[in-house]
Length: 195
Image 1: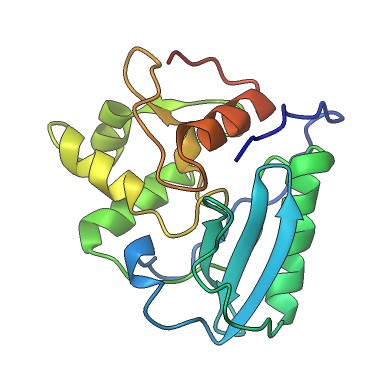
Image 2: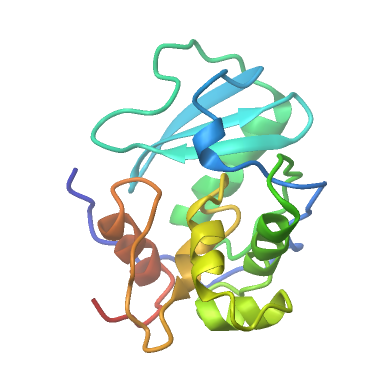
């Protein structure tokens, strides 16, 4: 999939910080059963599928090779999904810098600590895997941090695209089309990187 260049947007707008309600689930567990509520929308990085239990966002997937995990399931919307689509639209087109959405899932205690650290990386900034290890109290857990970042079930809302190697290299991206999707998001936020 070819990802268009980021569109310039107006001045970044601050909003309330991302509300974390509980834990998050690893993305590989999301394909077994579809969420109770599901909505899809088109964005510059491709189609996005957002899942919910009706109260909180439980999953977010970015299109990869023209498909989404639950393409064969019809949409059943909920107000929290409409809010998520609205905030994502503002992120892509109107300068939204943070998300104010309830999120919830599963994951191990360590994954939850890593994902919580990701929500603290401000718009337009990046952190290294080592920084995230330090933030979680596991300075030498670089590989484990990388695996937890890659298992993030809510890319964009939990900004794993803002994590780079210590020399600002992109080492991968598990959402969407992989590295091209990450490059688009980094450029959209004006974050310097190396490939």
